[in-house]
Image (tube, rainbow, N blue to C red; front, side, top):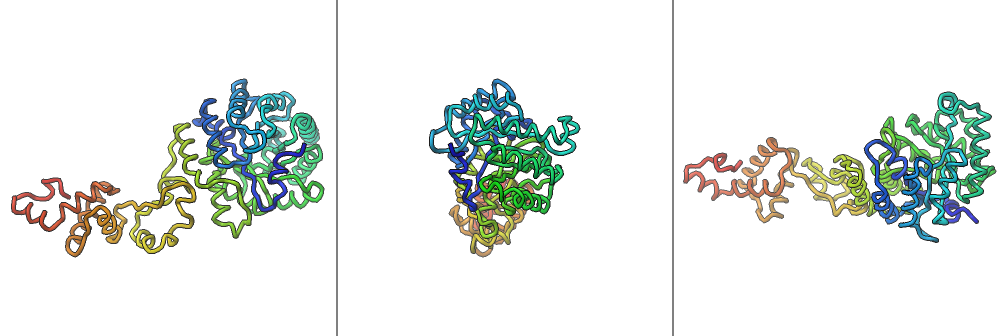
Length: 419
């Protein structure tokens, strides 16, 4: 049987496979655990989002994790369409068997084998020589191919592995039957220039003999460069990106799926590739994960944060009124927001205040605008953001006849709650 991903998108040089690891690498990080029911909900959202590969867990981690993957597959999988379902596996027959049991309910299945290749992993964790690592990698992929047509191999801590040895391992597993070669920056150590150079070296070395193999990028965010490194890998020829919703994952997390996808879309002229993601579902998927994990999305989170399309500065608001393209490089509707919105605060200008007041049915002109704007600034200094109720109170309190009435009655505005 032809490997599913090869048939679907693996041969298209302009199509990037989106491999989601929210429910595996993301879920195993502290604070992000999900129940089986949560994973099914998340899996449905990821399917609707259009991810190509869904890493639903690590079957051998526990009987519960194996059952959880099986539940996700049972609820979501379709025989001939939808995502490929994947389980992580160490380079052991027992792990591969657990992945097979968890995924056997769908023909669209993949096993994702990982094995450390760097000097520190070989010496400290595995206590294996380079020859032993090579033998274990080949043996595990050969065994996996007896159960799976779609096998991914990850050289754990690839970035800190000697390039020549890394290339030899990847060549060997490709010969053994691996269909995807993942070159992970497991500890978030690399820079974009280093990532791009390494992928170009590996692809030039391996592609001539194995033209159908897919190179994959899995970057962690320890130095805050996961998204940049992932994009650098794509520039060098990687055609699978491994990412998670909201960037959750071990330590500082993984590359953020929504950021990678939108970078590829907004800068299409630079990268020259597409994905199958329905970007209008990014915000709802992000919010679902936040709800499931009880982890709020920070306001300034790129793409899906509440401030991503919010504007407070007067200069920005004025530009937005003229043409949204002055300060927005993508439409909020493209990622699932209803539209841009202006936040009225101490940085807002007269134009924005007058526009919002007019929408609320209180046009501000002449001295009324001057008085209202002064009161607005004073109140904004006190409380920060000015909502519609506050603005309405300011408009009413500064109307000429309200000021005259207050004076005639002997009241000062602050005594009547009018700031």
